[in-house]
Length: 199
Image (cartoon, rainbow, N blue to C red; front, top):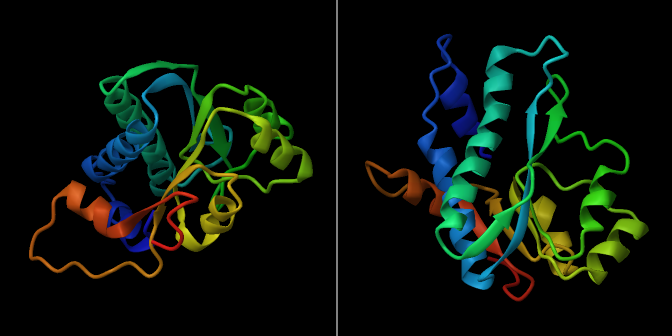
């Protein structure tokens, strides 16, 4: 998620959020997955604000946009093929944390479901040897949406992640006076698969 865009969306006291760009990102990810997977079982993972902490409203609202992405993703994917969805996994994000907070053992338990395609709108956790071995043995795909391109590329190149929709670094400048949410997504985010190399 581009820092400048997040600042622009959440800088006003009213915290008015245009959800459409975030929904468009979810739809874009669904289209990319649907192009390589005709159906199957899917489970999505995303962060939610930690309600037990004194969360800044603007930060909490930004984290909630992962849920907007996931909802739009599921709705779009459901229309593309024969997909079923397991219950969403929601990770409470600690106050002002820059990455997802994965409780011990949660990711490992998810990748043990060998036939389920796992779609992370959260950040990918640090992968130890046990997690890497489980990923390499499973049939279900691992998809990551929203991480920075330099951060996710090593996992894609290692064939641990089958599909990533990652924000470009640096972000290319817009060439038009106006830009639709879908065009914004295509400019800011790159699609990366193991076969594609550098986007």
